[in-house]
Image 1: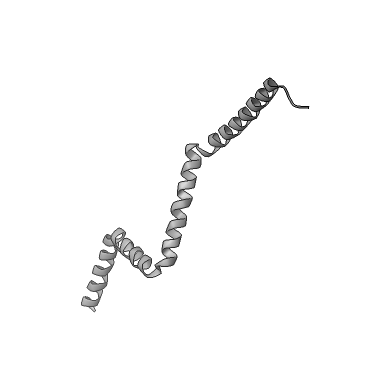
Image 2 (image 1 turned 135 degrees about the horizontal axis):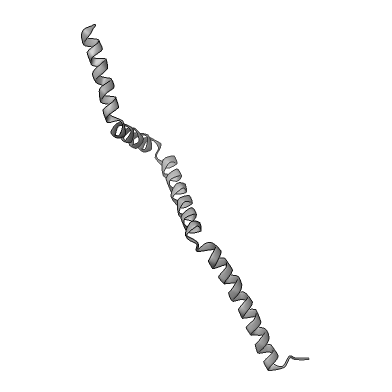
Length: 89
């Protein structure tokens, strides 16, 4: 026995409403700033890891250059002290 057309429309509306609410719940969960930030951080980390594995020499060179730039004053002081010691000896 077939349903009455009004009952079918009501059933369709209930199914559509449930599907919408489910989609809304997923959107609320996935589109929070915290979730978006975590996803982006994971993507950046994964990409950086792939690049490091693909180019280890370039990564080592860049890390060395960054180290020298960040610690240039302490390194310069160390070199000066070592040079003074060798001149006095």
